[in-house]
Image: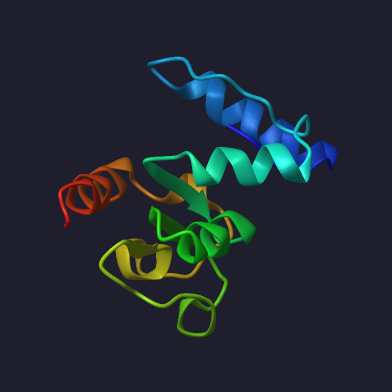
Length: 118
């Protein structure tokens, strides 16, 4: 898992990693832009909150699922065969910046659908 260099971003990623059943490597705040682009280019799929990773994955035509809290998916996301979105408002009924309110089931379902798309 990677993130920006701000303390809140690194702590957010660390909190997510602590909750995972299967461990992953957290390199939040430790990547250069070159590392970051390499990671996305070599990914089979990207699961991200709305931000640069989703846009770069789209440019590289990598499978990508973007989670939207209160940001505007209409302006910031274009659905394609390899790029999908889960909108917090559609799932829990309110747009919220608190993505931890997003139940994991719809995210897992969307990941599975994206993984099996052509």
